[in-house]
Length: 139
Image (cartoon, rainbow, N blue to C red; front, side, top):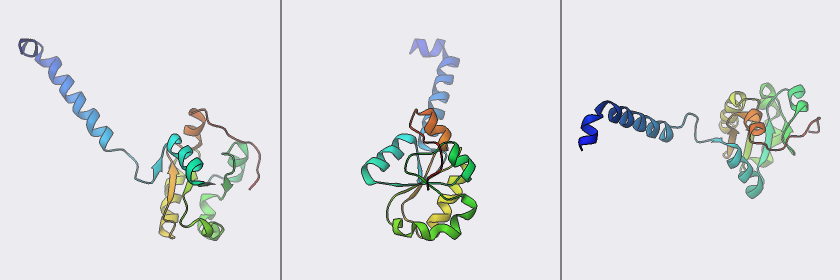
């Protein structure tokens, strides 16, 4: 108790910083549909999640996840019928940084895709985690 009284200023800083850390860890920025690279990998391996890359074709051909299909975010609504057979299966939407895929995820949820998710940080986070990318265009 004497230590706390003698170091009240340091003790107060420790309490405040600890409280802020707890608040940040419980209130994640993002939403319940966001996945990190590890969660996405598990969903791909365990539930055969479909990967939809919502970047433009030139971005896609520069490097994309293996077995992903390219449907640019601007054309997602008109091409959503291509994904109809996956309405009740997990879908992972990916873009460069996570911002376009967040909007695309909401758009698909509004169209009835119950298990749509987006990758936090996009391809940048995937690459930073050291996970594989494929070059060229296929789908």
